[in-house]
Length: 276
DNA sequence: GCTCAGGTGGTTC
DNA sequence: GAACCACCTGAG
Image (cartoon, rainbow, N blue to C red; front, top):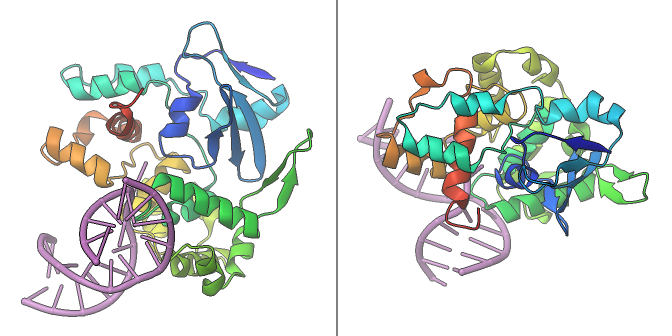
């Protein structure tokens, strides 16, 4: 068990920030997270009051994996402090989503996840990932005996046919998944190399894969490769940019942290009218 | 029925 | 380079 004593870390906010589709609330403030082939049970804190967040893993596993995964060594307080004081909207958005973190997720998993995300809603995206993992992912079991499905490796998905994927209701994205899986499994696009590239290089390399355009490439760059200048512009973000920023985000003020701002805006736009 | 949901790729001017 | 449009599926 590892307790997180950090005011700028909220599991419920990360869950609803739309960057991770395998983090789900179960009951009584508990969450379950599958990342690649790993499983983590989490007890959410109450937002910096009495209860701290608890990760149900060993200190060793935390230090060797989850600490980096949750980007615990970055100062999100610093990111918030860097928001233009005159930008009231962005300050409010940052305040509202101050527990969000930019996760460091697996590149392959993000490639497939965000190809599936196009023209789709979040509940359905989650369902499709569950279906693909259930069909092609390795069957795993926690020490407590809970079964779960790992995210399928590239060679497993490369072996699937488009018809099989269509049977899982992936729709026209099936063709993209087949093509992309084959290019990655064959090494035509080498993800180990992509991980070493800077943002513009990695983005250009990802654009070679079928079904990946600028928006999806930016999601992968931000949520897997941690290129903090990536700023995915989807329909929500575009709506806010048009309404608040004359259609264009002031990138010059946010060198090295534009992606964090994108997450604050996205989360604020999606959830501020709800319960928070 | 129709529209919409975290888009991409192809065609057309 | 901008402006269409087809593309699976299921919910409202």
